[in-house]
Image (cartoon, rainbow, N blue to C red):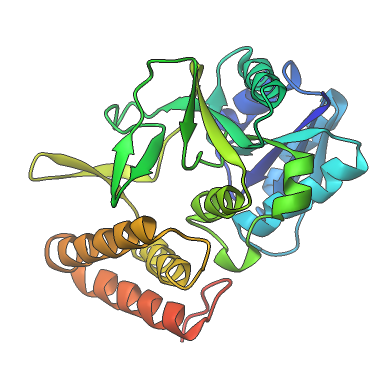
Length: 297
C-alpha cells in the first residue's frame, strides 16, 4: 500500500511542524505539505525539507482546510497513492502509527467491509476525558469504549485519518464550501450513507489539541473556539440540517449543541457581544446557503 501524508498548514509553529514532518518521513512513502498562504518566512523555513523528499504546495491565499486537503489528495493521486493520511499542523503521531492504521484497514477490507477511514486514538492532555470515537445510538451520541483493537465509529477526526483512494473515488472529496470545521463529520456521514464504515484503531495514538484552551463550565470541559470559529461551527451545522444523508439523530445533536453554545457563549464568555453576533451571522448564512470563507460585512 502506497501511502501519502497530507499536512495542511496555516502560519504553523515551526518546531511542532518540524517534529511532525520528521516522524512522518519514516512512516509514509511521501509527504506533501499544502500551505494556506503562510508567507515568506514559512516558505524559507520549509526549504530544508525538500532535501528530505517533502513536497510543498503553496497556495496564494487561505483557501480553507477542505480545499487544501483536496489539493493534496489530487497530488497524491498523481503519485499513484493507494491511500492518504491527513494531518493538522500541530498533530504528532506515535512511531508506527500509520503502519498500524494500514494493517487495520487491510484487516477490515479482508473481512469484506467497505472502509471509509481508520484513525487513531487522539490524546489532548488538556481534555483527557473526551472520547476519540463515538456512535449514534437512537438520538444520543455514545462514546465508544476502547475494549477492542478496532471499533466502529460514526466519524473519525480528519487529523490522523487514513483514507483509501478508492473510497474517495466513490464517496467524493472533502466539502470545499465548509472551509473549516465539521468537514470530517460531513464526509464520514456522507461515506456512511454510501455504505462505508469508519473505524477507530485503539492500539495506536496521536497527540492532538482540539481547539484552544478548553472551557470549564459547571464541572464540564468544553471545546473552546474564537468568535470567528463559532461562525463556521454554526453556519456549517445549519447546512448539515439540510443534507438528506445526515441521520435525524445527528441533526438533533447539532441543534442541541448549537443551542447550548449560544446560551453559554452569549451569556458567560467574553467578548459576549462578538460571540453573539458571529453565531447569529453563522445561523443566517447557513440558512441562506452563503458558504466558503467568511467575508466581513
